[in-house]
Length: 521
Image (cartoon, rainbow, N blue to C red):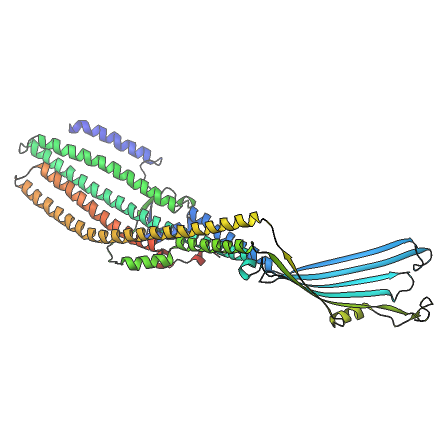
């Protein structure tokens, strides 16, 4: 048997040597990652985070856009005109009447916080013609106007006039809360996947140790059967157990690869050529660090920090504003208008004799455009206009429908908030309960593992003196492997439970000193 096995072994070694030169049989490089490294990489490279980080920037741009409504606007206008026609009446010059004019207007309009608008305008007019009997020719006219238009009922109010800005600010707050929620979920998912990978690797190590123990026992049993101290049935028991453990290892190896792929996807390691295809090896081991928190403490944290709760409250603020706006839109429209006007006029003056108004005029002092502007800015002439306009709609179907919709929409959002608070209550309660159970399980499974080690040790001693069989030893080996696996699983579950507490209370980012300013510029 030994001689027949030698050529097969030689062929196998030769094949390994040949294929190793082509890349087969080479071990993959390992990428060692701590939990902190994994979280940093995930927050930096995760595609979901990269996509969500854009939303706060878009919402902030909408805030800036909405604020433009309160930016003053300036308007400039220039116009020139020449008019020529045959004279049609006696006051025009004989033959052809010619009129030349030009005008310029500038105005600044500013929306004020309570819904009104303030406009300041300055105009200039120049006219020169050949018409008879004019007091100024050419003439320079200017006019300085201040006009205030203020709604007193409909469209009146600080919140009503700033509605678009407030909605945009609330949407920005919602986008920040949603991005915070994405970061929290990403950190939690990385922690959970990291510890699951640790468990699968440690479980694989445990199964391999169990397989080695079974193979050693099988080899020992074969020798004892050859010398006649054991029955051949003992070999069958050992071989069946070894075969089952080999199958278990195949499943455990598949689980390790799956968990590595999960980490690789979360960290988006495909963007790093060096990390692509590497075996991920966790550098941290799960530890039991005592951590306790009462339900009241956890629930208070959750109510104060949960980003999804912040989003819901900002949504309610927006819907409450929409309700107040819809209510305001049902009021009659009463607009107040105030105008202060200050004109000024100058030019080449002509003075007519009151006793002979149709006689030739006497030229007076020449004027100028600056004189007209000077009179306008000195408010030489006191001109005021004040008025109100009342508009009452009949059968305001759209206003009633918008009001009813806004009211129901607000009530629905408030009801959803109550439901969300109840869900948070359940999540926090479950998380605290799981943490307490996991903490107790760590000690329980540690004691179970120690007892399993002692039981296997005692059974091995009995086997060595012929007081036991392979069946019982193999059974205790399985029990020890299971106890080791359960102890590791309990440690992993405890660390995941601590991470879950941070997640459901919304304190993950604060605990890890992660701020939104690192991602939102």
